[in-house]
Image (cartoon, rainbow, N blue to C red; front, side, top):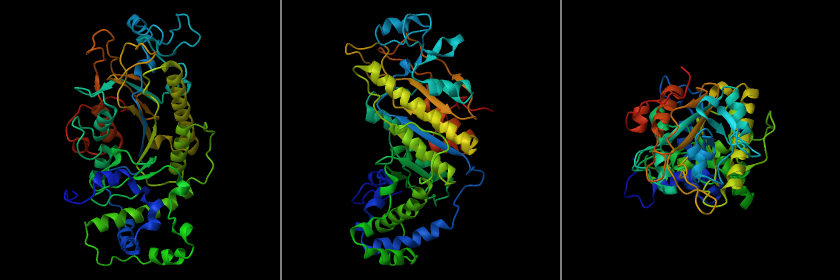
Amino acid sequence: MADPNLPFSRRIFLQQGVTLASLVSTIPWFLQHSALGVLSQQSTRTGSTPGVPEDRVLVVVQLGGGNDGLNTIVPYGDDAYYRARPTLAIASPERAGSSPVLIADAGAGLGLHPNLGGLKALLDDGRLSIVQGVGYPNPNRSHFASMDIWQTARTDAKGAGWIGRYVDCTCSGTPDPEGVISIGRTAPLALVGERSTPVSFENAQLFRWMGADVDPALEPTYEQMTRAGEIDGVAPGSQQAFLMRTALDAQLSSDRIRDALRGSPLVRYPTTTLARQMQAIGAMIRAGMRTRVYYASIGGFDTHAGQANAHGQRLREVGDALKAFQDDLVAQGNDTRVLTMVFSEFGRRVRQNASGGTDHGTAAPMFLIGPMVKAGVVGTHPSLTDLDSGDLKFTTDFRSVYASVLDDWMRAPAGKVLGGSYPKAKVLRS
């Protein structure tokens, strides 16, 4: 646990992740020099808890802004949906409309948005689980507060991130510097542990030591430093030791990451932002990196106005990127090793607003992807008439999904990681 009297916030520092590498040319020499000993010691240990399968990978995809679940998984069999959304509702196969839903489960009257052809193909192939009505008690409709709740797995949004706690719990106090990787400018709170430090980068070519770019004469000194492997006068657990370890973790990780991303993918990916993130994750998995959790994100789901076109475009980007990623994993022979989980901080209100959009709501669907999932629709779709102040009542606590992923896939102690016991959602095959 970090000293609360330290003059900087450890959470803020950790959320910046080891993106510090791109600035490492400005770090004083003695910090870089001393950190090498820590890295040298860490690199020789596995630090893993027996029974935790290191060959299993979790990929988390965040849909930022609050995805409209009702226009994603469409209850086309419920007239209340069409009454609440006279202009935004997606047409059913029987109703007039040029783009009807893609039927997910005809018996339940549910379908996918017509732009989710990628997810429909995964569903038909038995690789997509649609978890209905996911939320939590006393929902918060603030983007920031609700996202923190999802990422800490605590309704008070306090403490470390749930994935960070997973790393803390399974690495015996010596977490792998590459245990979790986020594609983005900063690491999300979900990845921040009490002891573990996430890797975060937006551009892998900038994720490197850049001192030689400033002055080529620094290169020989840096090379000498990286072979020193000593700690000179730095107290374990101090600010200096933490900063040193973080900076040099980034240096060694960056070489492996950039090597992994140099190859060409085995399938064609779309050219969208999310697809580029998924392609990078696919490349790192193919390269055999020992990363256990990868994190990607896409924004643009805060659809208060003019929702129809914007939301459809975002859904197409998500569906096509996830389908290409899964095809890549199959081509690699790694699909049985990788579980992908997709979530958003909340859904939207049932009734459309006067601006052709929807406002912040509560429950929404989650997706889990891979050959290990229980394919089809899981859980109960919330009622569209029995509402909580105009919002859906959740039917699945998101921590029940986390518990299943932790216990049944990652083989980690879900109760310890989540800080409580939750009934596991039946999202994975026996």
